[in-house]
Every structure is written in structure tokens, then in C-alpha cells.
Length: 427
Image (tube, rainbow, N blue to C red; front, side):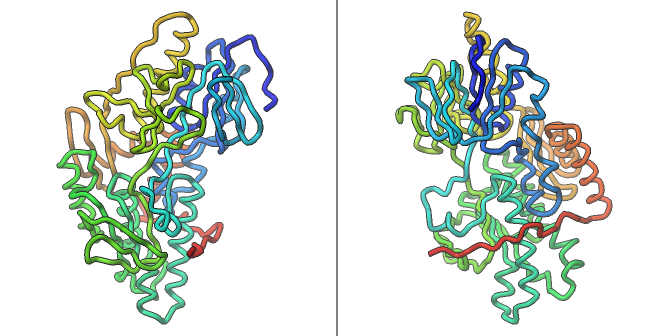
């Protein structure tokens, strides 16, 4: 890897997401050699991926170069690579560009899409966990409408204009709202020779409510907002099969759709090498103690989505969201510094700052610890929080002016097919 040897202890961080960056920032002024490894050279602000997929934002407005975050530090190194294995006995990690040893290791690999073992579905649906995947969705949406113009088959045209979103969590709800706004104000202008009223947006949710982790008020209001936008909501329904053409469920309802977007769940992105006793099968997460140390490994920490930290309040682990990841990253940095200074580590205590979701223009739901509200004010709060959370001043400015322009003109000018995408049906 061409990383110089140092008299300082070496801390290796795997992953440049919210958790990994928080840990790296917490260690940046210490007498340590910090090595950050990621398979991308940029940090992605994942909460806004759906806006890239629906033409609201360009990808570079929600991404930030990892090197730029730390380029003024002398003892910080970034390497573009994928970690394939951890060797805890030798304190070495194996990557696609070579091996590197560590004194302290932080696993912050985040999460990946959870298909719950259904490989048949995985072959044909669209994922939205990365910028390239969001661009694929954007291209596919627009290509479907271009193709709908050309076909003489009503059945095929309707399938091209039928969108199925599997999962009624924040990602599914926000994506459905964005598609509904496109249907209302943008697509009729772009495709005047298509009857856009035939476009269908469906959310399929396996439970009896949307936004299951939020309050009943938020769930009910989000459903009301979506229905007012013309979104079809199917609750207590599970997708069993999708062959690229037909969505089959456990009920009598089936859907003919060319675009199915999977937002039904995530699981931790594991790396080979840890004892299997440390892995929680449900959700593929790594068990950690109150200091975020991997069980039975004193020098290995896991934080963010990949970490499973159970408590009386959260028996199923912390929610796989940005806030727990940021808080864990900051605390792990402090604990590593304390440990290397022979001081006691402090147990991690998650402070729930609330959750929120936007359903579209002037429509959002916000759950704070002591206050719950919905509507226009919630929408402004949602925008303010997300703007502040973006990495990089330039990104904040670009996103703000994009939102302002879109609000005034009711337009999304990033509906571009930059790189054509067409799903290949697999057997």
C-alpha cells in the first residue's frame, strides 16, 4: 500500500460513510497514523440518493472527495481499495491492493441491500444504495418513457409507466413522493403525446403501516400525503417473485411493471475473518460491547450500520441510520485515544434526536423526542437539517439553490440520460 512506517500507533478505518468519517475527524489532531480505506474515493450523502434517482439533484452535489476532507493532515492516508479479509491474529487486513497491519481497527463498512435470501428478486429489481445505482434508476425511468412513446401495445406502455416500490420506510416513501411530483408537474410537459394519467406509482409494504419506526401520527399523515399525490399503497402484502415483467405477491394482487425498486431493508456489509459467534444472523451485523468493541476482540471496533449494539431500550440493536453512526464514530475516536493513553473508555449511550421523512413539496413528517409535527413547517425543518448535514460548503450551496429553483419553477432539470441503462433480464 506504500504507507510509511511510523512511531505512532496506526488506526485503520474501513469505510468512508457517516460512521467512518466521524471517527476519522475525531482522530485528526492526535498523534496517530490514520489510514482510511474505501472502495470509492468519495463520501455519499445517502439520504438524498432518491433525489438523484428522480432528477432533482446531480450526483456531485451529494458526494464529497474523501481526500479533500483530510488533505491538510500530515499523518493521514487514504487508499482506494476493497477489504476482502481481516486477520485478527496477525492484526492485518487484506485488500485488493495489498495488506496493511493495524494497532487499532475500526469497521465502518455500512450496509447493503437485504433481499432476505430471494436471489430471483435480486436479479431483476433496482437497488438504490449508491450513486451509480441511483443514476441507473434515473436513466431507466426516462428510457421507459421514451420507449412508451414508441410502442403500439397498450399493455406494454402501461407496464413501462408502472412503478413498484417495495418497502414503505423513509426511502420508499420519499422516492414515491418524488415520482408523484414528476407525474404531476414535469412529465406531462416532457411527454405531451403520452397520457401520463396512466402512470402508476405503487408502494408495497409488508406490515400494516408506513414508516414503521416512526410515530403513528407520522405514519398516518405520510399515508394521507401520498394518497393525495395519487400513490397507490398496498399494506400487509409481500413480494414473492419478480421476473422482470410480473410482480407476484402473497395475495391476489399482481403487478405488470418494467421498474421495481427495492427499498424493503438493509443488512450489514460484513468482511470475512471474524469469528462467526460475533455475527448476528438477522441483519448480518457484528456484535459489539458498550465501547463498540467487537466481542472477543480488544483491538477491533465496529460502528454504524454494521454494528449490533443491543440494550434494554433497543433490544434489536440501534437503528441503521446516520445519527447512531455519527455518534458511534465520535465516541470510538474518544475511546481509542483514551485507551492509548491508558485511560478508561466510556460506554456509548445513544441519544435519539428524532427522525423525519419528506413526501414532497410542502409535505413532511418529523418526530422529535418531545414534539411531533407534520406539513409545511416539517418540510422546512427537513430541508434545514439535511442542508446542515451535507459534507462540504459547495454542496450545501448547490443543493440549496437546486431546491429553491425547483420550488419556484416546479422543475427538475437534471432529468438527463447521461449513461443509458437497460436492465438485462436474467434466467
